[in-house]
Length: 116
Image (cartoon, rainbow, N blue to C red; front, side, top):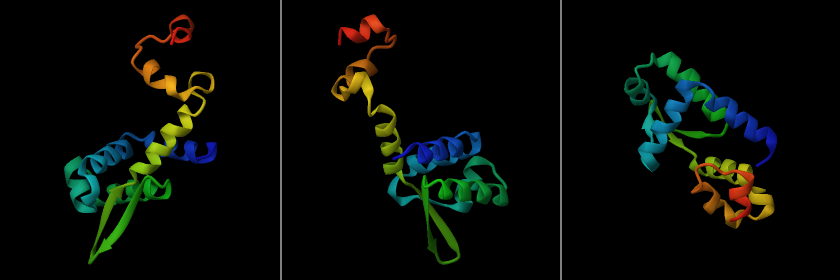
């Protein structure tokens, strides 16, 4: 992943509605959800849901598959995994194996991180 893609993903998720949609689709797993169910679950008007689903699709966070008259949406969790890898690539001065220990340290200060 590059910085342009990371920014696009963050911009897309900066909307509370899009973040809720993405989280709902992650929860749904591989079976995904049709647009109408997403709108109903989140209390959105159909056109509002479509607007946000399109933005998430363009950002590469979700995929849509036609099922007759409906579109089924699924979270592309791999994109989120790539984003996390991009963000933590240089973790702990280039020692990513230490990132697990840092994640368990609630208040990582230079002193506590250096001891890892």
